[in-house]
Length: 489
Image (cartoon, rainbow, N blue to C red):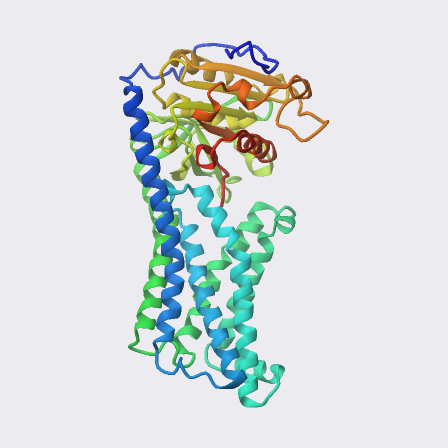
């Protein structure tokens, strides 16, 4: 357990038991200094690659503008109409480039997942939505005002005239679709929409990109036939839409057909929580690491239309895998009623919530509720020295001790410390701890004696996990050593 000389959480007994999914036999563990050097090198390479991807993103927008600047006619800016028109063109070029970047970020490309993680890629994807929308609206408004100033007409008359131009109605349709997608993704709106409705609206972003392309190729001389600009933009469209087609559609179909995953049993483990046992061919060749998740689709009459991002709760073997799901809504509740034999398709595995992301000599794991699933699998998939890892299991009450027995058995096998904190969250101030532990002065540092020399992995309800991360940052844990994965669409 933890050092009793420090303020410790009120611990509940962590039950131990053997389980059909037994820990792997002990492996040869790297010497401490060798492992530390390897992790530092891996971390530096990953951070360098992440920086390179950021540079490439903004460079793509810069190249788009630069190619327009060197094109014939872009240098002559005459009067207010010229300034407005050119500003509108630049806004449109940058916006379109960033829309394609958003598609790539949502394409679940393995390279991006290994470098930044799918959750961070989706977070950046979402953060670009509003800026892109403002740029697109600015593009339309500035061009309309610029053309109106040049023609001596008003904005309304110019808008009507633009509708009669080739491919412009499609451009306005694309803008309208993108507005709908961004508005539906606002937190206040998304919370009111069923996931299926939101997801269906979000798919319209692909249509928005496609219907906007004709006006780019036909409007004026911006992308003239035979120009470098035209070749560049066509290449960007082919790349981004190709990545979507390959990694969102083709690869999942190939993976599902190759491994032929089926449900073999649905095991209730607590009220509203079930473990779904799966069988298939060569499941170890999925390459899943402990802590990763997949996007699962169960082909039954009541579940086929809903994809579920769910972590592996056991590292897959040659022919077996398992996920553990909590009833968090109508979609996930139906999973508990699936009958054995149901076919399953899989996208993934995804995620950087694995030991590949480690850079520090010690390991700190914090799990709450159903967040235990990736933590349990990560612990199973990690070769640890005695005392290297500490695990904190958090539950609001005794009913939330999902998979605690298995996790404790894995921790015992590796010589890791385990403690538990049971009880509702404190009410005196926002905290991830119980009121009693908060008043007794329990901190992350008292639970994890090597906190500042640790990689901290956190998984649990979003608001709770955010509070753990805030405490870790205040305690001095560097951001790159905090691993907290958010599942995205």
